[in-house]
Length: 277
Image 1 (cartoon, rainbow, N blue to C red):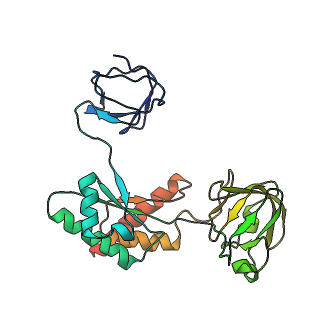
Image 2: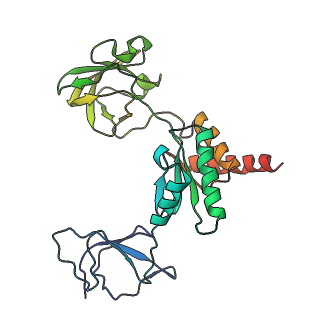
Image 3: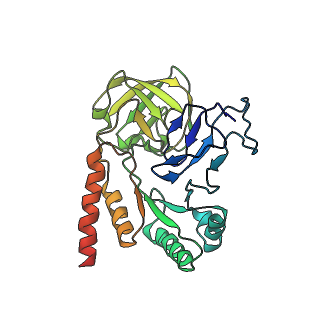
């Protein structure tokens, strides 16, 4: 029976635009794979097996997708990690934007303890914070309306909302990385501002999409990236922590070039050699 819809392989990420039959035998590089139905809810999808949009099925009846779960304060106990593993978690993600090495060490130790018991083999993924340009702390949220002027400054004197419609930026080269006419996005576009004027310390903008601006929001310019290194000093410290704990995977945030990945690989080889010696 033809499904006549688009399916996404959860193993390869590829799209099938041709009709797929419910009884098809499908292999990728000699391996059975799985497919996720992404047909619109109003489309008729009938397989005779109760398949609904969003379901995952495989040709051999087993789940091929891997589930990655971020561990936070509420899930950092052995009891909660076991519950997540029971529910299907395969990989534990440690978000290095939050928490100390001591805190993450506790997560690593619990994961190793669970794996040692033999029922599960949980992977450990270290996700670096990466370079970030953020607005400063505000005493109170600022309501910004379309058409209003707003200033982003590298002056420290206007931090914590001491001046109206002004917030500091944590990156001194911010004034050099942006240009008049650029669109400045807050948290990927929740709010946006058109850059009208740039001074030695201020970026003066006009609000395009208004809303509430709160503390420490992520800033980026549409279509551009800051001239910050892809791997920061903090990231290198976190990566070394991961190497000493033999984590299984690394996720680099805001990678710009293939060389960034190669740089991590070279660092990994040097550090592991030093640890071994």
